[in-house]
Image 1 (cartoon, helix red, strand yellow):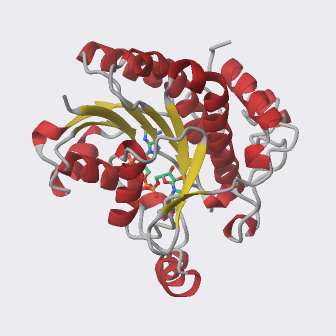
Image 2 (spheres, protein in one colour; image 1 turned 180 degrees about the vertical axis):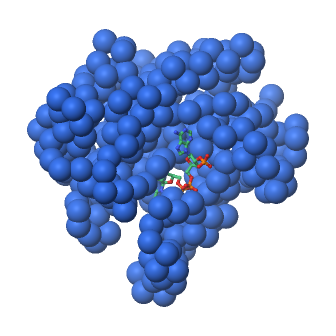
Length: 315
Ligand code: NDP
């Protein structure tokens, strides 16, 4: 049978390119888990994804009710879950004030980390039930959360500190809206959320890989300077960022190429190792990359896991 893969945020950028790459093989049915149904349908059509190879299902990661509703709807569809890709993200680098999810969590960490945390925790059961030979749970990471790289050292740097803001609920009322308890900074909140994504993948690996055989992986697909991720940035940045990445840092990848990379992590028989953060070199060959000290801190991963469980109502 065809593989059945859920991709969050498949209505644009990397998620859409991955959906397209997988659908084109004829071996996958893609469930596009998106907050804007019409946009997702249009995106699938204009990418030329054949009707029989995808289904759009509503998911708003900025609402935990919506996450639970999605899980119910998915179960009712009767489809198996073979691979889950947590890809959606928001990036608010120019925001002066924090904005919040339905439950009152700062929007970047609330969407990118907490929404995906609840989703993946609930869907682990469904992955477990699948009889697919290579089951995978993939959480898209980023170099920007990685302070052992050049790009990860552009201020403001990711830093989760002692997690006091996360412990307080990130609500900006009786706690800070930032994980480390500091002043709101949209660019930093995004990087912090990506560190949480990478810590969560490793904690999943430690807790569940042996018992379930599921492959847990993260990746940095390269700098896809043209996606909607930069839509909130100032116009001059959006104009200069793609050529800067193409010609100066040479970290640029097209959406197509990045989609093929993530599709490899979903389906390549050679990429079944669990607990790995994949990257690609200039010749587009994949390799196991090193994470920064904070992004590979097992003690912090456990604390983030425990605090996140409380915030999303699992503990
Ligand atoms: P895009 O902005 O193009 O795509 C993000 C997707 O997330 C969109 O489909 C968006 O939906 C969706 N999304 C946002 N908020 C929600 C929500 N509340 N509920 C459901 N879906 C939501 O960005 P990219 O494709 O660049 O980003 C994809 C992933 O790649 C992210 O995890 C990002 O961190 C990562 N990444 C990107 C890099 C880059 O250079 N672009 C580099 C490294 C990592 P909608 O279409 O409705 O807005």
